[in-house]
Image 1: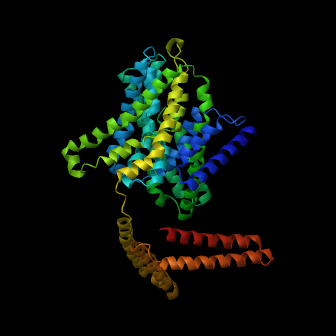
Image 2: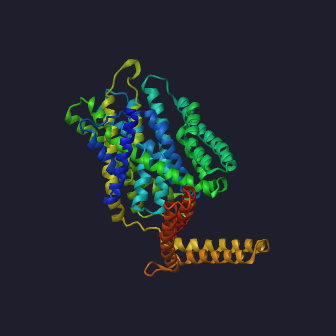
Length: 524
């Protein structure tokens, strides 16, 4: 009961922190980490030791799954080269650079376990990157690259961590063993992910109850992750592959009611899990500090060295990766070199998160032959990287993005494209209606034609700017007043006993659905 109470308290604090961040115009992940750091030293506040397995198998899969569901597969495929350069190449480069820095400062510690620390701090966090990038309104392609990187980089880092850990505890690790580990983790993850997409896609297609669709959607990331872990494959790759495949085909797999309900469910789940994750990161500080015994001067020096390595390697990798690829004629013909402002913003968006801390806590307790190493120091270094990158880079990323003046996505062009496609869709709908007109009364057909015309006009109205109220906005404003009046009548009828509660609930649901549609149209 006490553990359940603590969970409720943490969720309540995370919710209040997110609400406060919105009120103050701050980024919620940053405020929640700072809040966790402050609460960690409040006497009597519950202390939590983060379980690495809980994070890697219990929290990460659903967050990766919903991110993959919402990722555009065509955009992901179009940006696959920069995504892989960051998710694979940059992670390996950062891990080896950090491992080398730590080994130079701790020459008595084997390079293998130093490399394991490098793998721990190498991958930017999926939750942090997505939350911050979308919140500050970065260009769509930058967001796609950051999201794609964050979906895959954990897999690279965890595979490297596994190999480095095996080497550090005395296992024989050669080229063959590394190749087998990579093929098993990556190839096995892809196979499990594809099988998950086939099996669960089949189930989604044949389920008609939105509640069952919702329940299945919750089960999918855990089922896929557990299946991948059983064969020692990458759960991260498996969940991402399943999420990308199902998300791309979701309109054909689920009914409209199921998609609306599943979407609402995952928005709430992601909101709670993200808030909880960042709060828990801050709350780990007392546990991290408890076992540190290094001299203060050395602690500051090695922390600064690791932070500098993490910060610089991202920029050192990004600029050559961005421009050297354009030396290839085929790529140069297809893509013109971007402004240096783009790699600067991408380089600044290297926030680490809870996966880094969970991986650090999973470092081996001892090395080969039972030898000890400064494990507490390594966990502190990982924690310092999380806090400094998340609070420092995350808080200043909006300022950097503004100073770089990246050209935003053109809303007029978006609206024009949407209006053109809507025109084609309306033409197809009208042709379908004309073909079926003889099967319904004339007033019904005419009503559908008017609704189609209104939907087409709404798409073109969005091109007119916001200086004057459009006809659709005026319709929404007046219809909202009418809905409010209808609600009052139904509520009075229920209170006076003229209708039962069930009738009121049904009427309210219909009015709520119409109001939700009105609000969406006004917002757009």
